[in-house]
Image 1: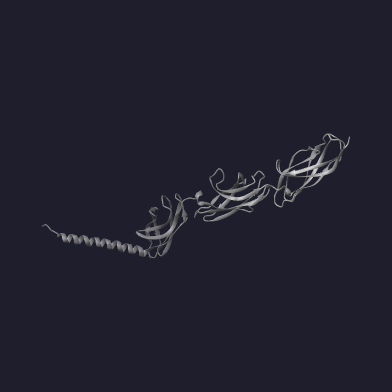
Image 2: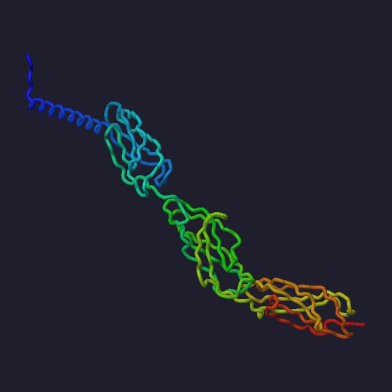
Length: 350
């Protein structure tokens, strides 16, 4: 006997079966949701770069009276961890973790989605993917000089203001300055935290070889040589003028012997003073007897300093009699100078 079933009956059976399956999964999921809860999610590093490894920590809570067994994983913008089995004892919480390497994620804040046995929970803005630090994240904000109008021999303070615009990374490097080829001579270490602004200073000695005119100051910051750096020029920061010899004074003159013969060598000493309050004097001094010069010698005098300087002088072919000695003090030739004559200081005898 052949049994036939109407098409309508088969369709009804199929629909009923699908409904039963759906109900089963619905009830099963409800059972999971009732039994387990995803309590929290955190990471070992909140700010990361591409290629960094980060550990994800998740806490689950089992509210049921029986142990819960499941499989969980984490997903960051499509980047998933492994699926790992977990057992959460009855009426308890459990923290688990696993690591993932950040790869090919766009910059910005990312959500982390935790999934366990089909139950999911989204934790918003848990991790921030940033580009690694580069010199473009540095900014030279400002430059100041402690004194704009300066004289050769003075020391001024050059101050730079620097900003690290990176939101995560700390910059460790060096900075220095340049004024028309004259630099600080050192690359001073500097550390700037993420988002921080740092102000730092160095001394600058106004060398006598620095051209007397208006100068710019260029600041440099970057990695120690031969590493890369950035720079910025600040114009019209220094106005340099020559040392004014009106600040010099020839105080006294002494000789080792007053009665001398032609061809004899004596010691001539001069007492010189720098009356400038802030500038170091660097120049030369010399002497002259009846048009016969001595040796041009270099000297340096600190601000307000008086100091004796001496040289050997051979008595020229002079007729017997008393002679004056003239001392000269000033900038290196052909620069300005002052002089002072000390009369009747040596006697040439036959």
